[in-house]
Length: 430
Ligand code: ATP
Image (cartoon, rainbow, N blue to C red; front, side):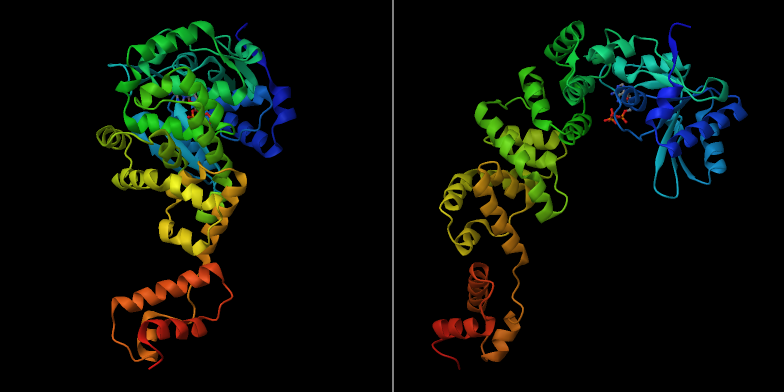
């Protein structure tokens, strides 16, 4: 048939042996249950592109749940099933996972809402997908192992570097595909095909993206931030005015772009200091800067962002210019500490967005110092006991001053400095 092509050799050439073995077993089990089994979507796309991808998505023509149960049993793996969606995940002992779905078509009762599903064939299953490049399948059953199914010109589009929807209503049915189109376009350096772009723009103008829940939009934005070149994607979102339909009062300018650039340049170091950081919140610090309080409140609610985020944003917004100056002047850490304290990761990120390379380094030094500095020999109780003092706010003040001294010079002798401070505040050691 003209819609098919043998890519078995390519698979043997490009996939690790273990993965080939697994795929062959998956085909064998399909054979034993008399069900056609395919690997689909991003896995197939990336195989043809020569990009490593171990995310195996299986589609079964038949009862996918029964198949999944059988696979789990044969391979001594654990199955978690989602009956409502006719899908299951198989977890192997080493943590590796594959997803199994029943071939299905989808019915949209209303645009921008999640679809109802019905059991179907592989062709219809592929037709409901976002873009042609993601709509190929490779059969795994023994006799047909390695047969590529390309019903919609996917391979052509992949060769030409084109992002194309499968039908005219695609963006209306699921407007998150507007964001996905940009993500894939930028990831592969492709182009959104002309009529797809027209559909995208029309759907956008007609306000469909606004109908999608904040949660789903957020998920797609978060995926963009995990891409290798998130700034290019954000730039494209801005140029296509998609960003305006997500954050109505964000005006993407050169200045904003510079901030984002510095922010992305700082992420790695921030993660070393804070552990995992929430990139989405960090980027929002820049995109939502200078919003009026009412609009900010609405955005925060829509995207499920903690209320504290808005408060912190407002506070940082006011002092960031001042902090920038202080960093540029290389003021002592103890001076910075008075203004910054121990900032949460998003606040640090917000400031990073204002700083050039060398200045960022200074801020990172400050952060490392502030999080690593601890008074080892001195505590409030110890001060009270040692000098026979009453508990008072003055004790806290002394502790804080001692901490500041240690920030500026980690080598100080805590006890010696404490003596001096007590003398200063209490007129000599009692
Ligand atoms: P990658 O893993 O390469 O980043 P991805 O994140 O889109 O791609 P998933 O989100 O797991 O991967 O999607 C798997 C497949 O499901 C896609 O290749 C696509 O065919 C399909 N798909 C995902 N989301 C949608 C959507 N909103 N509309 C239509 N099809 C979708």
